[in-house]
Image (cartoon, rainbow, N blue to C red; front, side):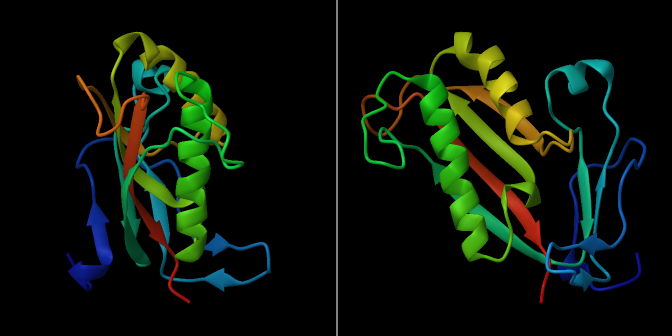
Length: 165
């Protein structure tokens, strides 16, 4: 491979490249030498709203700590409300990514922990809403027995790649 390996992430090795190129930001700013390529998934992977792999070149890597919450952004309790916890976790991840110069759209990988497998299909529906362009992060969905605090139903951690300015 040519180039600086510290600026290249390859998350998988099989599939077809279906997207990539120069990023265009809303301010009209272009960032060259930064690409994100989503490898096309099987019908089942598309149905489950994840990419089998995302390949990036250039940019800076942001490692996102696991996000959990029992309060929404207005500090209202959302204990026991799976949908509200998912939406709030994604909003908090987006806030963190904005501080790093990106947004939720820059996530290339996520690991999701749920404590009840019956929430799995609902999570897929909500993740589809969070990435309406169909460019989903590579993902794992894992069932765990407990979280650090009572009332937590989900934790999301991830990796994002944002353009260097």
